[in-house]
Image (tube, rainbow, N blue to C red; front, side):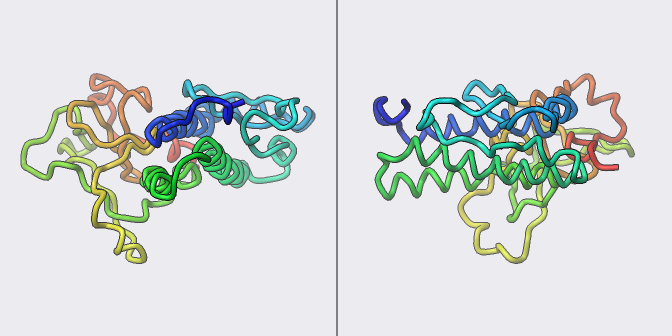
Length: 238
């Protein structure tokens, strides 16, 4: 069991959290049609697992009692056909967020108070799975790390009018203005990674979120031929 292993650091637990989160997001966005098909209501209780290697899996819950790790929501497949598809995906997203947090704090049981606070602070900087799946705007203003006039070619995208969009920038929510102080890096809407001028980014023309090209499988060459880019979440919307 995980608890019997050597103590984990905040960074190791956060890395595990981020990998599992990336896997769940892929299931609910890029691979959503495959995920939807696997959640057959006629099958037994199914769970959505995000693994530490960034892969996801829809399968039966662990048979061992108690399980090695906290288990995700049981029976997500039963409600699939009784709900609007988007509402059902949102429900799975909420349960997935709860599961991701429970795993992180299970692995961090030996952390002290300050370490737990730092772990949650790192986690809280990422958009939740629910926020990404439902296309909710980030709760604070995230600006790129460098606001100078020099912008990496990898961090820009041409819009339909031929103009080059600036570095990623998200709208602010007035209710959370007090949080706009210490963390100002732009986050990828899929993996939650920080903005890096050395990597190729692409911005959604609908929701204005920004993504690593590799996370949404868009190369710089492919982006040049896209007049209006829609991210995986916006592509699900009719």
